[in-house]
Amino acid sequence: MATKKSNSKSTSTKTTKSSTGAVWGLNKISMYTIVAVAVLYAISMVLSLINVSFRVVGALQGLATAVMIGIVSVLAWRYVAYKPMVWKVLYVLCLILVVCGVIIPLVV
Image 1: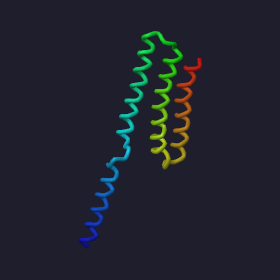
Image 2: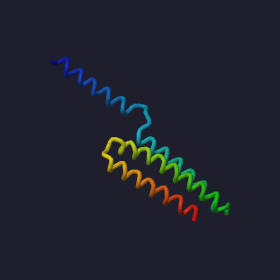
Image 3: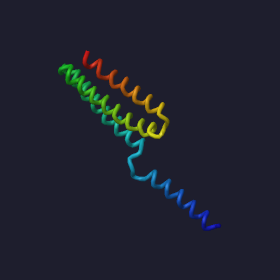
Image 4: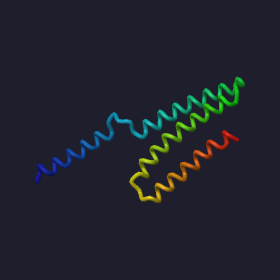
């Protein structure tokens, strides 16, 4: 019996170690996303200060927003993938609303 207990402990320890290893975790993805988006927003801010075309500035801000929406939607899908169908429908509806909310102001 003592060997069975030690095996179960070592298995749970290995699982914990592998989940906190060098794999891209949610915290790391979030940090690099914030850094990339901050750089894009800083470039668009500098370009707007020197009176570069509004289309260029808007395009950079749209790109930054698209990057954030893309990463957040992937992470949200990981959460929703194994939930009931109601969650998946809610996910799709919210994603459509977010995309429309970003695209419509850029077009109009």
